[in-house]
Image (tube, rainbow, N blue to C red; front, top):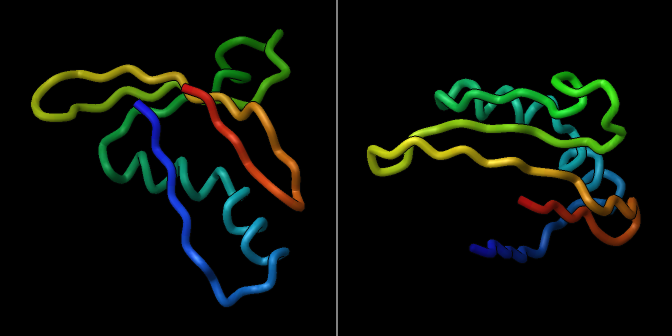
Length: 82
């Protein structure tokens, strides 16, 4: 499954990157929506990659997803892999 989104914003680029890279806020939002979230770096101290293990229900079925940050170019893109 691949998700892609594009939206023009009337904000300075630095502001957009700062909001999108505030991962703690996204974690808090997910937890409030009954998603179990654990950082990969916390569960495995040998990992130097930023990532999360998530568990949630969709349509009555339990889903387990591992999300990893694979590219962070502050001026151009933020890419994740699941």
